[in-house]
Image (cartoon, rainbow, N blue to C red; front, side, top):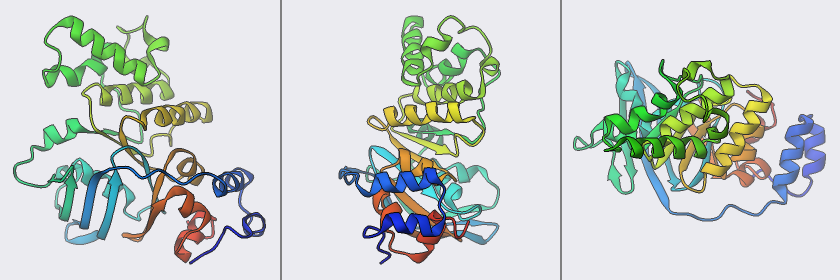
Length: 288
């Protein structure tokens, strides 16, 4: 076991961590442990193959039904591949194959009885680059409720749109611009619009694949505030290359390396007392 608690200040100094990352670890060393919650996903021996080549092997982990779980690791380690198993996005990739078992609330989401389209209404996804539809701000948010028949009357749809934009922290900025194109918004606003679009169909889970990578620091800070607000209501999984971001926003962290899940624990434990040397090397910048 890699013990970082006893002398973490010297440890931070000796390894030459950036001041911000050092401050994050200092803060987390004295933070209370994450609370125990119910399980949303149970993953057992999950493996993913692309054209017969294994990209992810033998992943076993349980994902809480609320709060934020961060997936970290170097590029090409399998974290985004793993994120896509939760809404069966790998189904859309030619020659991709998923084995093992992923249970959502006890139900196998890869069962033949599961409609992937309906699953994706329950498990929304926010991509790395904001991708608003070429429609108005209003119609971007209204799109899902319309196709799923969630709003029998116009006033119902209006309420859903407003409620979703409020939850995404965007309503005050766009309430007088609802007829303008979604693409007219800034990058940070577009990402929050995409989140509003995702939550408009009342999902249970939100998947985020490096949602802040294309945003400036101010927009990133606002997005992290939004994630913190949403974590009480939703199960959120986020892929991030930012160690500081993972430490700030998540309660659970999974570290992937070369297709393997190396370590999965409370975020506080991962960043202050990792059990595997590979985890320590990655979060301190020795490997990347």
